[in-house]
Picture 1 (tube, rainbow, N blue to C red):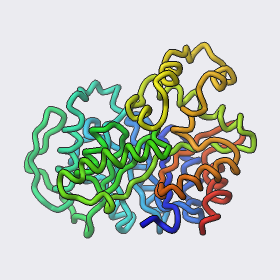
Picture 2: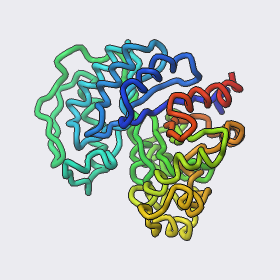
Picture 3: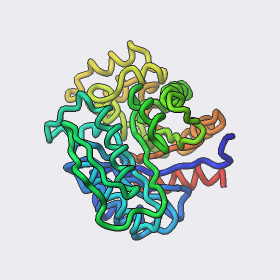
Picture 4: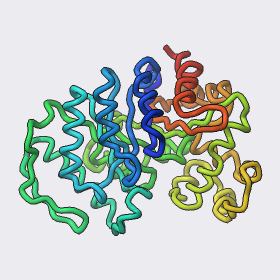
Length: 340
């Protein structure tokens, strides 16, 4: 059954200032959001420090890292950290875990077996959070008769897997409580692809996908001028397509191979923002971003909701008109409020 109201959480990048983050934390519970997660980008500001601040200074929303990884953080430390956040928040912690993206690059980890590392990390974390002694030895991490040295959480902490590739989505279907369905799949076709892959994993262990919280990850750039909104995200999206995005997922989400190749062949450093706006197909941008005027964003969001995509995670991008918090407030006031 479709949710009556949208379920929308916020993911905050670790590249902003603490003052900006504090402004969001102090106000977010008055807006129409149900959660606040902090990106774990290892050498940027610390996800657990910020999650602890959010946990202590809110009363309703869920909080935690999204997404951490099994490479730069040993699963034992992750279990202890998220249990601490759960204690601070009085049971509102969630844990997002994935493959790390560019956040683990500086440490030189071998991610060739990353799906297995992610799977075993989830198993180890759940074991530790249940109060069990845990031993697990992998090339990526080791645990030897490890156990938490303080009271375990009274209720299970939901674990979300974040990603867009077919193997990781299927892993989520097997092991996760929810999924942050990665950027590049912001379309009905993209979500159908994600659900299909998640269902493969779920069915293999006799799970019902209906019991998982599936959240479509969407960047947000909103402004009174559509070109201003577009200029705030075009370079970021072009870089992601060139360097990071899973190309199979992009194609399953609706992008043509010709469009993808055009973006990957651009010399991004030589193009101005305006030139880049003309070169990157808007259809590619829209697979990642709710982008445009409040009216356009509202219309597009409403079409997703009516098609059955009801749960979202939003990451606000800055543009020359609006910063992150102002964008989140504008989206809540002019888009989400119409449902409540």
